[in-house]
Length: 229
Image 1 (cartoon, rainbow, N blue to C red):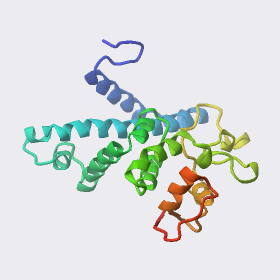
Image 2: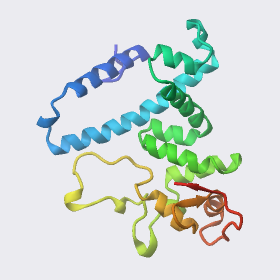
Image 3: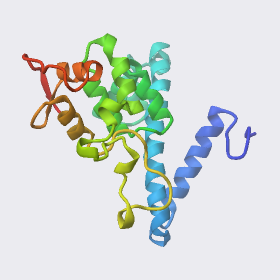
């Protein structure tokens, strides 16, 4: 029995509903859908992908920690995924990578679970803040995900930054149905580079840490450790 309208009462019911929903979407006649519904579906599917990523990572973490894979004669969660989930070695490694990544970045995991952050931006933010000292990562994740004013506030000369609601397109370029996923926008990398003072398409991890805590006017790191964004 469902606990409420459209809400499953158990994991088994949730999985059955998940398959039914995806079967319906996969077999739908996309050409007959109005443009607004197409846009709503695409946004909803991205949010669902975010939630799928964190759900799999959390279940896989418990599965691995309890060594449940041994029940099927496998030596690790990765090999179990290869043979039981029928995925490639690279895909299995990717799933394990997300398990470890989100375990180290619980703030980003929560944003994914809420559908507030896309999978691709979650990976990017983990790469950025993963280069910071371990004790600084949680605060940096909070700032980047939560829209701290130093990173996602208004841009130069009053122009909206990637976390500002004014940055959303208007007029013909904006659909009226649904709302975009929150979190960093497509120009977040450029915004971070400009705000930290780094040039080109690289960000210095030390400069990023100083920027997050000391502000954009802090001195740049004389011994840079760059990585591409």
